[in-house]
Length: 476
Image: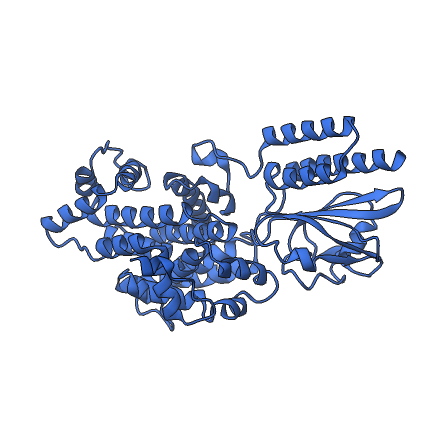
């Protein structure tokens, strides 16, 4: 056992090596429990008892299954359920097994390393799972749970990887912002998430249906085809319901379900809202912000917004106090960066400052997942005809919502990052007199949600405090 604990991540290696490492070193308990539950089938009463025994061995799992058993998503009758045995009797073996598998996976992943890539994967998988369950075949409960689990586990390899604290995760986090994601996976891991998923599905005995969903080639069954459609839908919807990708998936779904596109569009929008409620029921409200049409008020519980208004006020108050005395520029800027990241809720934040030895802005402070490469590579050559210099020329904070449109679309974009200038971002230039001497930049990385007006106004407040500090120092 000590040898397993000492086993290092395989680095750029084979699919088999990564599957072995994730199964034996990082998640052996999850792997074994999933095997145990997945191999149970509702063949007789003894198997039902076995399922109850597996669940009852884990107090947290028992609590979660009972909580889910009393939600509308699983319990339409609203009958109060207080024991696992009653849950299996009233709701059904397949539903309770699906709850157990889903809860185990979600809890095991979130308690390890909830970085933004993992949250995005979980949101996408849960959205696809809810869509598949609601769009699935009639009243066949077994099929509904089958497609739910099939979709939820469809990217288990990617989720398991991002849940681990490994040097490879940090390296891929850096590289994935600079090149095609699949090529980045091959460069760092020697394989792809798709291949790792297929290996884990087999090693963890997740069943023939999940294996069919993630296999190469065309699916053999209508149910597996439906799951693949909902997986594509969940990914496409991250760019907005009106996007071309959603339109293409709707065409495919419409033919598959023999349902009109207009009727289907209304249904999937409703299902997306239901997915937010399911996310809360599964104890991961943080992913609701990553779901289309997310609305904290619609899920029936108070959710944390991506920012924290009380923390904003507290940090802004601290900044005001810092400015009363002789300002410490470094401390003020560090506080501003932290405020934009933690209090406003922006995923990635950077401060660039004028290099005294050249005509360029270079990185001084960064915060957020996926910003490691910025320390060496986020450099702005002042005077160049590119997007960032065009924004600096505006001499004011800006929220660039659609950088690929209008006056910005023909300008050069940074080559070291896949999102700057391609997705919405916040820009806050700093000046001494009329000279640009710095720039704050913030975005939400690969999350589809653009910064909203409230976040932009808070961003402007923080930039204003930084500018006041510079003004005070330049006058002395």
